[in-house]
Length: 357
Image 1 (spheres, rainbow, N blue to C red):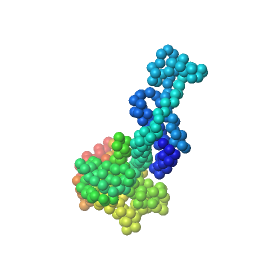
Image 2: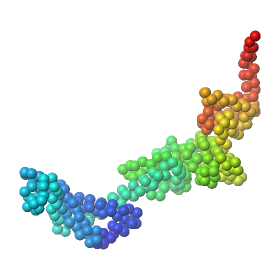
Image 3: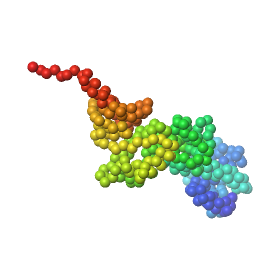
């Protein structure tokens, strides 16, 4: 090996953003492997390479033992003390065993090791980069579809969108740009595997954080998210600033902010409701767009009984119970919805309290 080879490794490390010492370690490993292969032995050796000139020396490492040595990885105490009288049992004696023309033989082997180590280092960098971005949004380009999985190009790595994480009915087009939510980053023998989602509630939350400056800056806080992907979602928002309307901030001028998110989610309807510490008010808000007439809270069973106008009963419950189901998921309360007529009939059917004499 020569100085040009050493210089090339240093430049390669800088170009790839990899510590050159890691590559030099790969070269050392390659030299050890090349020596063992070339000599057909399995003895312990250490390779010393001058990082300026490229000059290589190979040293066999032998443990000093009393009595007879195996001649490969051991050396008798008598033989060791002939080299240096200070050697004791258990010491390591290094003996130079550098073969002739070893540098030329080793250089071929070293290239493969360095390439492999670069690949491993790059995979490690990609893993660390995306591991730190778990629970965040990434934008990629749809590359291919296999076995119902959608593979998305994120640059140096591919993300996998499995059928369970796909929005029902969503159609994916080749070379289309799409935002997804990182749910897991795995280490595999083929490199990092990024698992992404289009259905996770976190995707909706992060989209609002990106689109609404007041949320990004912490002025408005998203308290809860409930999703039925591809159909409808509800989010509750709160602010401690009396000068800010949290719902209006999320909707945006002429609905522009929320519409951008709706478009990204391919038409998924989004209800934005105001959070309240008062469970009765919170549940009433969550049933939007229905108007609530009366709310009764049972703290012990965490049930909220709600009365709505007769003509809004179906609106409050929603198609196949969707509105009520999302409101319950958003608030964490069981919700029992009655029309005014139903509530009046139930009240009339209850026996009147008996007055004591």
